[in-house]
Length: 273
Length: 327
Image (cartoon, each protein chain N blue to C red):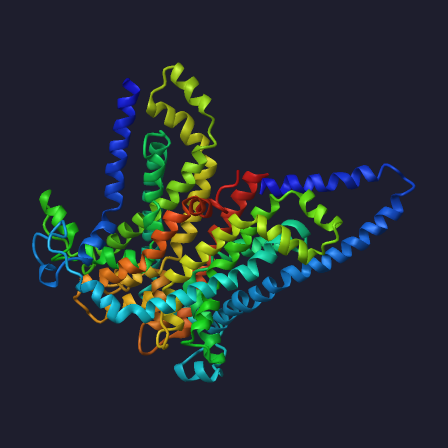
């Protein structure tokens, strides 16, 4: 009896801590619904008592092209990342290529390179090639955030596939490519989902590459849409926060649909048990 | 990684047992060698796209950046590509710049301020959530939200919360008798503001990793300790903290490497200002290269390369610690 009330106390404390942690998220929602004339009110309204959808109307009017571009860039990044990372992960896990260990180390180090340094290098290259302000140039740049992570996830996952499964496919006469395509990929669904989710989210959230390489393009992502709102010395914080809410939707979807993959992605590469 | 090692060992064992029959030995090994060469080529085909990609989109940008930092670029010669080689001049310029000292100091304060509090909060929460109460898995999942949000979303939300006149933080502080603080626009508070926002973003990462580390501590240890009359604090100090030390080392080092390169958050909230009150090496590098109408690509790239060097030192330390734990 005593332990049950003790546990209930933990639940209450847990709820309070979560509320405190998520207050900024609540505040974003609250401000996105606050009418413009109440924005500078003191004290601020802690609840959206007179909700307005002005902000969300502004999103519909101004931000749809940006959202579309982000979707395109996100999906393109996922495709490119999977195309490069899945075969490489398979090779590192099962084919023991020459220099595989060194490659693993390179991938680990690649993840530590600051984004701004990469952005500056890409800027020079894209300027030479005339790729600045192009959406697919941005896909290439964004993929560099996800590819090393993707290879490491695929390698770790595919190492766990029993060797017998692959040997059996060989005996049945399947070549390495066919084994990869019809045996290894289908059983690696979890890794495919994890890598896809993260590469989409990172491309969707990218600001450094977008601002450096696509600042003046026709197709700009949503992060620049928000940045432009703020930069214009815009005081319409309900529009800014409404855009922020809409830009958070992929993160929310990810959390609801794929929670266990998220935790797996965070711990991957950090804790080996 | 352990899985990989076990797998490799099991694949080697049939070869060893095959070697007992000495007569077939040479035949078998020749065949194996031929198969081996074939599979080496296939492996190459699977890995070649990645290697080409890494060379073109990692190595080459890094090389371009190094090249930038060793030449005397102007906007015109940047486009024409004929800037004269200037050796370490850019590095000298940067080191003599009055911004270098503050940027370095702010980088250290930002990085250590962030990871110390992220780690402490993450550890406390991990221990708390390890009590397995009702709703614990759901609440733990909700704690991931700050980490998943696009940085521009978090940064603009915190900017508005820190607003000096209408921000909710100053409103909350007035209840405890603190007069309004001009968070983002005062040289005294700008750096603290971005550190606070960054701690919020980093807590989930620490929580998740430390929590998964706690799962590996056997429950019997706690049972034995509580039979011996150890209280909660004693258990934490004598069992949890020491046994979590390897995971803690990994978390802190990885956090360090990630925090060193934080750019978006500071740039969006303060642009490194006011003045250079919150500029770090990352924002200063960007400021030099892209933040003004007269870009200084050379010095900007030089600062970037200094940042890479620092990140690599801690990065290699991380790899060493991780390898030693695996061995």
